Image 1 (tube, rainbow, N blue to C red):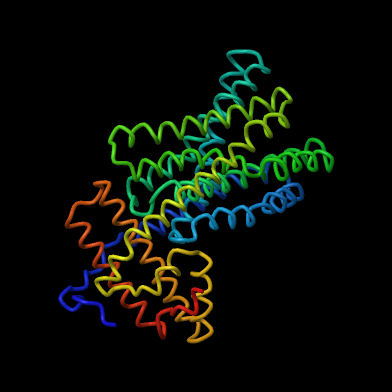
Image 2: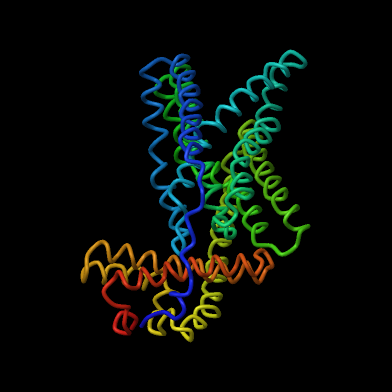
Length: 382
């Protein structure tokens, strides 16, 4: 079926982009990363450094996959995902290293060494590190707000920032443990940081992300101010609690009583938000069936992650990888249409903006539908 009205709609010209911005940004992050890793390598030596890098990389793929799995309805742009991860691994780590070291030196001059170490770990580091990590999420909210569609997006972006930060910080800790205590020190540190608590930095920054994600879809101007600060405060509080527990020797108790429930809470936030999105799909997508842009048989597939996956596999077997890619774009465009309606209902888009975005998305829907051989029929959705 030919979608109505598209011929009367001119295709919007591509937005002007600052082509220099991405290369300059990623070059800056690379320089920051080299500075941090160079300092670690020079202070630890090549062998401890190599061991530390290898151990630090172990949990990264699994945690990254888990975070990305939370957002399968509308996968985020790869460049933004890479940017947030690299920000945590490089720029945020460099900022924290400089400020935390300066703070520790200043406090050791002013007060006794033990108190200075505790205050830096339990007070200074949580504030500095969560601000350094959360900075990039604020940039996303200000400059790429349409890519921040709720708490799930905040969890994904915040978790990746924290994961990058934890990876580089672990290189520092593993290398230091190797120099000071040899194999025994490395094993003990890896058990604490790589086995017991690899999710904690992602957890902390996910709190900031949740606050920003809810702020991005909130109708209330006061909530848009309060929620990001509340998420950041919660991130700092959890971080401070963990660091204080490490100083006092209560890691296991704090992990099971506070951190593990917080991790479960983040997963529940994602589950609730996913259900909200499915509910919106049931409300919004039928209107596009009536106007001819979608067909009724596709609605169960678009609402279900399982049927989305099966639909992509079906068209891939029938028409090849290009058709599967078109099916994915069809699914994502439908999801973005739903989110567009939701954000317009929340008075975040004015009518002209809504109309322009709707036209662009409907054009994507039509192009995708004509690329794969045929719409998914009822046999796919039994």
